[in-house]
Length: 113
Length: 115
Image (cartoon, rainbow over all chains, first blue to last red; front, side):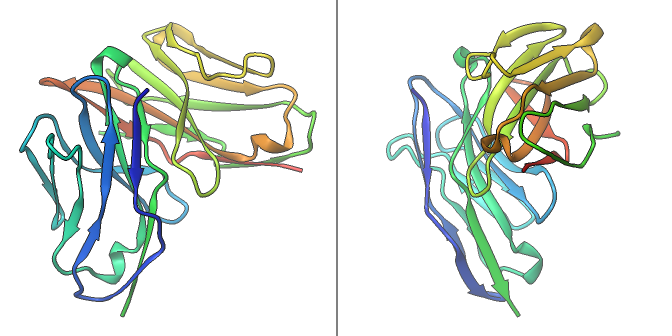
């Protein structure tokens, strides 16, 4: 079945540092890929998405590129802020599976001033 | 545009009691999902509705969990009787197709603690 693996946290960074969160996936078909962010006490917010190979999703300074050859969708941000402290989830969906989301375990990011 | 609404936000019950959660999806979204998120893990799908029909309930523990979506809009998820391991955040999401991609939008969740 489908699965998503992302790096374990917590990841602790200083403000303005570069952030990378690795995400790899296993899928039977050709999935759509997503990054969701969860701030403390809140639900999940869609951060960015990509639907096909070499697509780059971007939002709020975050970027991720759909790499079919390496089955990866790594999340990056060039200069993090304290407000980026949250848990980040990588996820995939496939039309053949009813578009349900399969999530990774989440990566907690803590940005210190 | 209003987002996905859920209530209550928090619930504490004792084991073997029953509990119900409510979800109101974004207007016009035909598909509705319930996910269970155990602390420190990613959400896992419990049940998926398309309008008022069930698309996927393969991961729903049907001996204790039930869900319905009345008139293809609001949905309720019930647990009866609750077990300690049901302590989790229950997330409701609704989705809409935009081009070739189906994008899900999540509510704030209901945090359940079973004592």
